[in-house]
Amino acid sequence: MTEGSPGQQADVVVLGAGMVGVSAGFAARQRGLSVIVVDRREPGSETSYGNAGILSSGSIFPLNTPALWKNLPKYLTNQHAALRWNMPWAVANAGWVIRFLASAAPSQTKPRAVALNGLISTSLKLHRDWIAQAGASNRIRETGWLKAWRGDGLANAKAEQAALAEYGIKSEVLDRQAISALEPNVIPAYSVGLLHTQTASVDSPGAVVKDYARMLAAGGGAIRRSEISQIVPQGDGWRVQLADGEIAARHVVVALGPWSAELLQPLGYRVPLAFERGYHQHFVPNPARKLLRPIHDADGSFVMTPMEQGIRVTCGVELTARDAPSNFSQLETVVPLARSVTEFGEPVGERWRGARPTLPDSLPMIGPAPRHRGLWLAFGNQHIGFTTGPGTGAAIAAMIAGSASPFDTQAFAPSRYIA
Image (cartoon, rainbow, N blue to C red):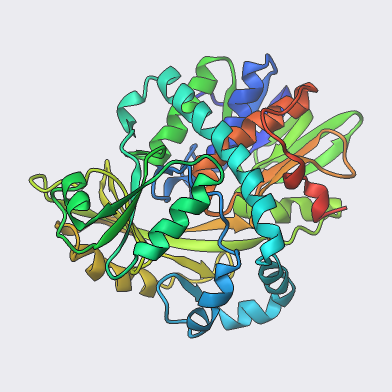
């Protein structure tokens, strides 16, 4: 990686070196702009590290769809593996909760699905291109991902298949025998499955972000590690103040994920950002009984994925403060269920916790800040930031260059929430 000097200048400074930030930096550099990406940690070390590694074609329906209302009674018990929530946080953020629930209206489902489909389709094409350019094709698996039901899930699988087909997304409904043929090494716990055939996965999402960052640096971009203090308008551009110096830039891209809102507060922006916290743990795999692709256990509300570090088991969503103490109860609930499907041994390394930034409508902000020329916002990608990072970055780079975005960004305009 290229380290910066205490005082620098650039056309574009990207704040945040997760998948979204690195993608924005790489896309801007491809357009001939000088770029510096700044983060306190190495690229791909925060939220982008801890996901299930799925490049998901079918994640076009946010968590807050009309189906949420049917599931809400069991979620309110605060015992379901899919969702845990903190009561004091919910009371303090009642406005966000109300807006999140309001977005579950039927009238809002299709417009958001159309918007996300455009973003995801663009992102998946870029992922496949960039992984090849980075020489990291060994990391990607074109094996799809499997959503599976233990009980009578046939109606659910067919309904989901039909919903995806409306947007041109292909999938296959599988019975128990077809699942066993697809994943011969798993225990036959599932009666019905839905294979997302246009989805890929990677064996280390954090490593893929680092691969993209190395590609950026090799192309003349810079990666600078430093704490970000503030951003200050300066003439026709910006001054980015860091713990060890400053950078002058014509454009600043805020892609700090769950840390984005607080950086924007001194500029008068009040961003309604909440956090889908998530947890994972790696386990030693059984080399004789390999898991071949990610599996989403629909009844157990967890995902298990074969990773470079071992079998990664990830649990559902926790709604609470970004920096609240860890609560591993969701993860501890689902690990025995995962063991009932695939064989794995002892834990590897420490348990991980991360916070995924979420706006009330579950759509990211992609576009210009309303009152500050040269300030661009690229965050709020909720639990699909790894999938949607390249498309988000490419759209921001196009806007900076004054070109047309590769997909319709109207639904993602920051002005829908801030003025």
